[in-house]
Length: 356
Image (cartoon, rainbow, N blue to C red; front, top):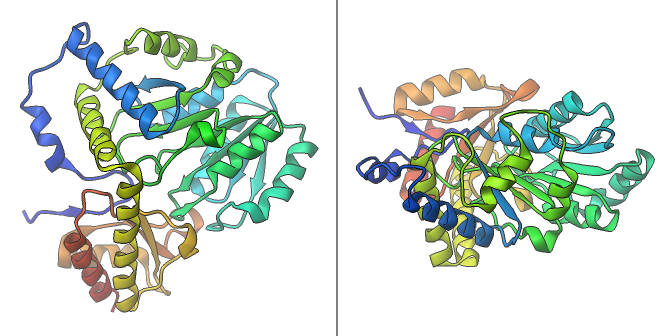
């Protein structure tokens, strides 16, 4: 069977990177080697996120970590959720499930949150007497990057707890959590950090942890997760393969230097999009607010489902469809850091040819 090149935005297909860990000896979670691994991961993530906050590691998908953080907020909190895409809607649904006083702040699909929306958001926060502000940093469904720094600034100035979904942004754009004033940042390792699935984490400061003591779940218990993290322990069954890969990926980014690393991703994304446009394809979204690791292209009246089928059959390439009511209107491409410029040139050519 021909090899499939997977450019889905769902997770990075970086199996070649993982092979070396499969041949290493197993680390027993009670050994000193495992504690050292946890300390390395924690320290690395704090540096990567520019934060001194606590790092809580969870064996779960990113959605589980988001629910852990949001559901842990005390009863009676009034929550406003930024909603400008599929995953903003998911955040709102999680908030609604656990808190009756959850309210959306809506923007059109694909419109990035920025300073132009600040005054209206502040007005809504005051009207709803909000205690908590929640938003997605990088909206995977539209590939746009929301201004997480502005969310943190608004939260800090109005004495709110700010929770940011960084599942798609970590490893794709620089995150300065302490500088931004973000109290809780939730992320996963299987997108731009290119690790196997099954490991997520929460970077939580003392303001968030001191507030979020609602014991709603035996498994997702923030207090026990925090206690374990302070003792360099891991609650429940760890994903050792993911932890090893995460440690090495973060070390690679830090060794290059974050500014240089993320600039290189941006440059590669711009080159890829120029190739797509030269092939007659139209990029979805504001070019000033697009992810360095995700790109969406409009289907221009074609069926996304049929386009995907042709792409896979003719070129052995898989990308993602749109999401929700716009599923047939565009394709979403995950070009994560392990993909070379040559890989992306070949992908752009295949997409252009298949569109004709």
